[in-house]
Length: 282
Ligand SMILES: [Cu+2]
Image (cartoon, rainbow, N blue to C red):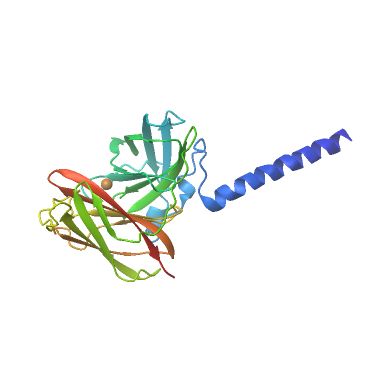
């Protein structure tokens, strides 16, 4: 009798554990950062070479449970399929690693550059402004292996603000830091090459800006995420040496759905970021 009860309890415990695990697996890689293999099973991006696909990234945070608005140290250990540190990285767009940090609702976006510390470890201080879930994307190039992207969810403790809905923009003209930026796209279809052209004007005078400065070695940078933060695209301009008012990018959206697009440009020594939300049809 006692045994039967114990078995039943165990079965119940297993069941509840399973039902808890299921949404985390289908939704995202899980927010519990205590486990170290999340980076590894975040999956490799389309187009990665076989060798690059075996590259693992283990993210760790200090403090282990990041606090809203406080400095969080993010450390990323890169290793190969055998678990040995990868210690040679190519510089891509002036940096050995690009790290994109977004909140789950994509209302928060940060693009920072972890510094290489040796032995496969990159390090950076990030600020996660409010409670809630965040996803980090590390972009890097292990020498001779092509570009790699690895991601990790992390939770900032506390009462998270209500997520902001991600809805396609009715107008693709935005103002940021005194610039008026218009995004022109052709028809956006999943799996087909799409062009994204940003045209930048002075918001006050409406004069085209023709002296954009190189930002990370190019006229601009574009990061694109699907609304569930599963599809990540880092796009570089067609003509890196352009200086405005147009900056043209080409990319291919892997699936249909809603995507957020951040364009980043530099003018008079200051980087500005303009977000757009677009819909990609099937
Ligand atoms: Cu970067």
